[in-house]
Length: 354
Ligand code: DOR
Ligand code: ZN
Image (cartoon, rainbow, N blue to C red; front, side, top):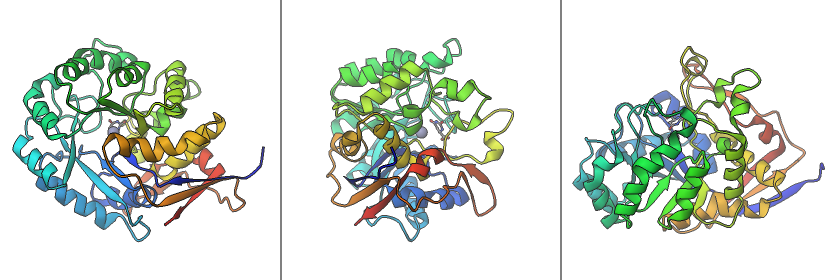
């Protein structure tokens, strides 16, 4: 039970992360830069990142904030926000220059800073066809905003109404269903070879009873909302399976405590500091540690046609030196941010082997 477990894996990637800007960026960027090789950076700033020039400037700010312990191979991968502002020629030029990696679609109003999003994915058909031709991936927040649809059904309804038509009408388009929260998300990935799916630490390890049953826990509130136990079990089974379509994306999304413990709670879970530890502990519990490297280090890079890492990371469970992991951190201005996953961080430590 208390035996030490030590494994080496290729350096992991985070295929979905919110690093914010300014003081919050300064505070959170080092956690991601220390732990991950690629980090796919979400563009939902205010105003959103809609041009190659904005993405290039944001990438520079991220690299400046990455800190002295950043991995030598840390690479922010920039996504543009797909809305009416987006200029397709600019997107193509940005991708050609290696500045822009993909485009992210948010349904307007679905989540934090999504007011600038689109009404329907189908409205962007021309841009999507251009992206398909150029091999630029579409990243999707798959959640219906129809108020008549129950919050726990919104992923399934979005997929049915907006995603399947796009996938079927533009089959050359590479698509990622971000932060899969239900079996509907798993199924659309399984049914289409050009579609991949990212999976978060929190959708892997928590269900809505954790969120709601024993005192409502705003730190577990995110979008898409954490769903039922059955959905969580199916997601964990997919992540630990041999299916190469599912890969790791933290959706780490920091908010100050003042927004998380408010009359209207902001959606988002800050998990970057212990993301690897949380997933390692789950895979350990499931007897699937031999699948961890594929999930966190290989499949995303393979899906996006990138080289696998050359550097490695060593993960150790029950090492002696376990200090008490912090459960929150503060920005320079003093805003407190809760950190997800301290229990797993009590078990696991990791180090880069460069
Ligand atoms: O919970 C979430 N928080 N989901 C998202 O899609 C956005 C994110 C954020 O930016 O806070
Ligand atoms: Zn996100």
